Length: 409
Image: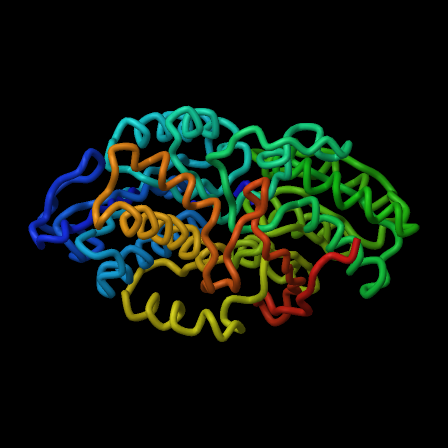
């Protein structure tokens, strides 16, 4: 989706005495635990307050858990990882300010986040200029990795410092279209988006596949997600004859929109992407959420054998907020930074080099490991090689998985 504290890393010299390097500092203790006396910071940027904080806090906590696990295992000899989380409130301007703050701290060797694609757009150049690796667990806009003309077949990687562990809307939108048309029997859709980078992009890729399959578009419209009165668009939906609504956007608006559509007498499901896949959507829509669908990146974390340890450790750590939709991807994003730091330290006689950021960035491109969400590695654009997605449906007041798979384009 658009819709992810800081980590510092260091290493012991062979002689056994801990020495400060050009990047990294002594730190007698931190919230993530002690794995060594040299600290490397992993930054986290996400909405920690506001409407999308349910997702942002899951991102922060999951990255923090990765740091704790690395420290407990002494995964990088002589190095303590520390998280510093900054709140972007899902605003691009705040994200850019946070990016500037993170790059100014020499101990930051990687950043996890953000949640929103529109926020990432404001951060990418700042990180790229500083050669600071950024790994988002949630951004899904294809243009972030493949450039503004990706849909025309002109794929160009603009920022080599940017990576993501979530798959993109180039796959998610068509995946939803194929399920709705081929499996759910929906043939006539009303498409709505919130005009944001994520929402409009997702709606666009959905529309392209749905019409290619033979589906009809009964109508299209936009909403202001800050407004909670959607009566104008709801009236259009009701009179359109659509048998499904596809919404490109996030749950704070999607929940009330679904509720108002059902209240109008149009008893048709609302379908969205990973931006609505959260229990908050169900709470906001109430009983109207029953029968609504969403897609989200990957397979359900709880169903993956690789995620059992993550779920148990998250529970044991006692975080107040759930890991939510992007917890597993956030853990894997942070662990990709940790793996990269380990590679750099191991290749430099147990210490960080003077150009640690650039070396860590280079190492991130080549990481490959079995993570919480499955195999974690990146292609030539910085995109996740794991392309799996899942369809969820609200049943009994909860999101329940319907099926997982990959887009057959």
